[in-house]
Amino acid sequence: MSRKPELRGRAARLAQLLPTGRAQAARTPFVLLVVLLLGGGLIGLLVLNSALSEGAFRLDDLKRETKGLTDEEQALQRDIDAYSAPDALQHRARELGMVPGGDPAFLNPDGKVKGVPSPATASRA
Image 1 (cartoon, rainbow, N blue to C red):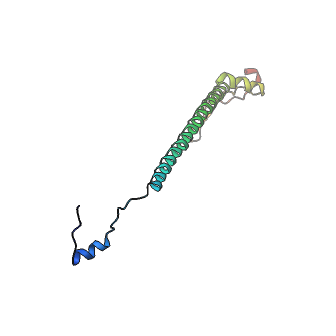
Image 2: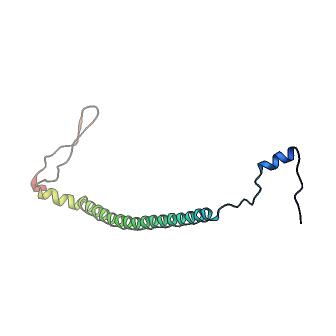
Image 3: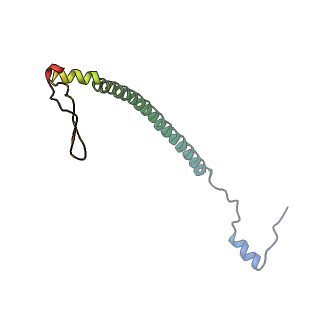
């Protein structure tokens, strides 16, 4: 049988500091820690995946809403363009009782009048 050699002096004092039996870490806490870390990681991934899916649905709704608002804006712009067309402006002006203006006269920088002004009359319309 094998015997340990006797230690003397400094080596004996150092040997007293080291544990003599087999030092084994308990396996249960380590296994529990690993299971908890894996479970926490899986739950974290599930929450992250759910948040991303919710964001994707929200993005889809916002895109649909944006398309609807863009269509409405284009329809309103067409209405504005139709109301500002020259023939539409002339028609609305006549409905309000307005008549086309007469011949204009211009004032030169030296104070002289250029042209002969004439009043607007309903007969010219």
